[in-house]
Length: 254
Image 1 (tube, rainbow, N blue to C red):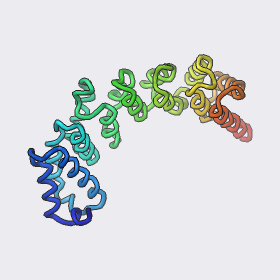
Image 2 (image 1 turned 120 degrees about the horizontal axis):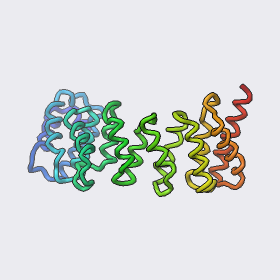
Image 3 (image 1 turned 90 degrees about the vertical axis):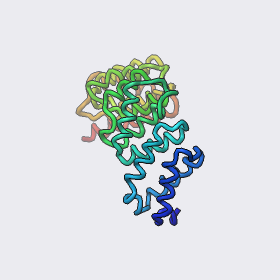
Image 4 (image 1 turned 45 degrees about the vertical axis):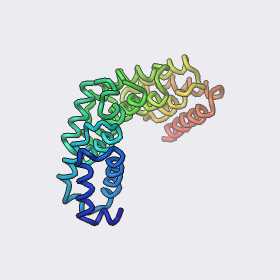
């Protein structure tokens, strides 16, 4: 790898392999792996950036899914506008997952490397109509919580059919944007699913991190419910409930 990273001839040979339409998929994947490794420390690559970009753009529509994924990932990471626009277009068009260059979850992860790589509406669309659970989780992870998105996030939090990996992200997204609404919904979820449910500890932790100045009657009611249910809940819920108690003690101290 060090020889490849410091040799113009070796780098040119690597680019030639990536550019050659006759290169087998396995060789392309190996070349892409090599490129990814040396990109972390090679000082030569910047001198060949245009050639590398052109070669990888030619692989964005490769028949091999791993070739497409690696090429798009590298391009997106380097901020290539063509690759970013390609990924955005596919998210907006919402073709079947099997026809996409990369999965929705992978596209979101690639675009989200950049602060403005993916807009809120695209993420919200995925949250509301996810093609699969992995895409839902990835979209929630990057969706900002505000007045435009909290309804969708609250709906997700209340839906026991949705994966816990997605629901568990919601409390800490919405608890400070609208603590009163979060508290009302959290109480409803606790009543329906119980303190031994998977979501219960996340609801309690969400309650514990609400700032004292944001407390409402609904927040106080949620905290009271958590304290009442603590003894009958799961071990994880009991630990989270203890955080709620400690946050109240700290508040009283001040």
